[in-house]
Length: 252
Picture 1 (cartoon, rainbow, N blue to C red):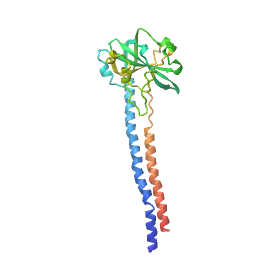
Picture 2 (cartoon, helix red, strand yellow):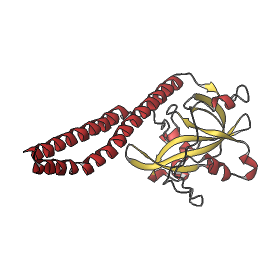
Picture 3 (cartoon, rainbow, N blue to C red):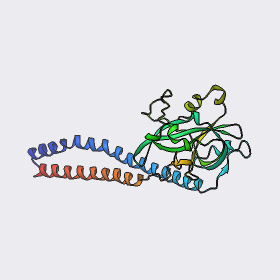
């Protein structure tokens, strides 16, 4: 090999330094994202299995015995039943969409027969029925029996704004703030979870429309994992082809 050949070969190898460095930097990231999606897949499958198992159970009395709620309230999506009287004047409206339509979920405090206060998500109303006076038939008075699913308070997202209590506008399931919005004497009686009312029996007049709990949780994490692993493989293939081309040209 002549000196010129050696110099050309060194030039070819040097031309691979930055592409190799970038490949080595990107490869663990792409593989790591694929592994993370596999972890998310396992978590999502466990969540779906838990939801299926819980929602398949018959409704359990929330206050029989009186403190049954302490155990039932730890079981997300657990069907429960409870009786009491709604405090419609204290309903809270959470911005929501159903089937692409903007509207509100109506959270109404229920004075339970056991002396507790339970915020019940009675269901969805469109913007035109935001005010309770526009759906007076659904403002049921007297004793009611409610069936629904236990839901834990939401975790606030990065972009979730504070509630506008003056306008009764809420943006996430902030149970602590909803409890604080009640008279001070009531706050200690608020149960530490929500109940999403079932669709049946329907409220008089059809509103609010119950059964809003989302149970068909999407699960595309395997697809995402394969995408990241595929990108990692493609990156290696592209670098290998690039390196082979450069080294071949250096030997030509």
